[in-house]
Amino acid sequence: MSDQRLLFFVKMKKIYLFLLLIFLISCEKDTPLPSPNPDPKEYSLTLNISPNGAGTLSKSSGVFNDNETVSVLATANENYNFDGWTGSVTSNDNPLSITMDSDKTITANFSEELCEIDYSSLQTGINRLSSHYQPMNVPFVDYAEILNVVLEKYGSYAIWTAFGNFNNNDKSDYFMATGDWENTSTNEIAIVIDDQIVHRFNNPQTQTRKVTVQDLDQDGIDEIILFGTGPDIGNSPGDKIIIVHVDENSYQTEEVNAYSGYFHTGAVGDLNGDNFPEIIGIDAQQAFTEGFCCRGNVKYYQNDFENGWLEKETNIPSLWVSRNYHCELFDFDSDGNLDLILGGHEWEEEWMSSANETVQWKTHIIKGLGDGQFDIENPILLPELNWWGIITDFDMYDIDSDGQFEIIITRTSGRDGLPGMPVNNEGYDGHKIQILKNDGNNWYNWKLVDQPSEIFDNSDIHIEWPYNTKIYDVNNDCLLDIIPESDKLNAKSFTSLNSVRGLYYEQQSNGSFLIKYKE
Image (cartoon, rainbow, N blue to C red; front, side):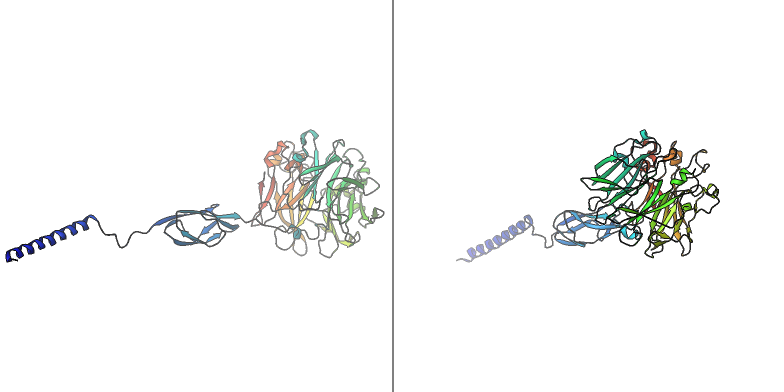
């Protein structure tokens, strides 16, 4: 090959390499190489709390990398419990481990911590040992609505109530006895079992004044005991003490005593230590037949299960009970013997004294000695309240949870001229709750709970006094509240006092009580 041709090929090779280089460079510009560090995927996590303010979370809502693991701890605030997670993840784990492979919304759920009070422990010495029975699951009852009656048409129509167990289950049943102060034709009894009226019949008493329940034969089913006075007209014929035996299919009434008396109150408890309750009745019949003077009797009945109820003697002087219209049995000194607490018309000292005899007309405790006998030489007098001298209920509870029980006394007015009341009222107007503590030597006033002013603003306040009082934790805060109870204060059908319907007194952490209402 000639030198000229060789030179030509060399030049062409250089040109070819140059063109190849240019081609490769241009291709590199048109197709860029991938980045060595690409941006990772990210997902959002939204965290919620329900209800607001019920708790806190260890993490906040935010954005997290793909497959990143996030741990969240839920902490309940005071009075709340953590219930679990819902939303994108359903779980009860706490802390919760979350894998972020998508956007997620998760809610931490809390519920208010409900306080469970052992009511039976608060009633040692009275619950099932005596006449008072506290309903465990029925804080408010509209008695008139259950009975389907219109209260106004009966004038001073009343519903006396008690709670018990009439079918041996865990649900409280109801008993209601109706009456009228002056009319004996409208009286009836209704028994409600598992929220259904199973029996409704004529009341054998003309005027029931107190009802209570007790398992008299210890078979697991409560009996109902009625104490009655007869109507408040003329010389009252009085009433016998009545027992109602009841179950879901039948009822039966039994007379305790053979004669009628003015049994304004009574109580039931094991007075002789045989583990079966006895019945004690306060008979003020002579107080009426002798011109409201000065006589009464205490009757004590024991069931021997063969010959029925046998009348036994007590040593309580008749003068002590002529105007003591309410009583309960309770072991105040924890010696195993039930004591008797009596109250009635405190202010009537003057006409009582007219008999020229010593009369224990004040509210007092008589220590029990066993078998229906009492220490009458050393009565324990309790503090009075001016203008509020009529006792309608006693309750014994450790209401402030300090380890010592208190005496809760429900009172209504007993004199003309009480400030804020009509000048000519006859008493039995409004109410005041008195709570007594014991300092080791004496009972003293600890709290006085006042009613709402709306009660006095009503034109017919004469009927607005509680027949009894419940002690119950209404708002589940482990503080016992007070419910003054009557068919008027609790009944929806009694429209003239809608403003105070559902009234109760809510205990605060500082020991005070606030007026509250519950529908």
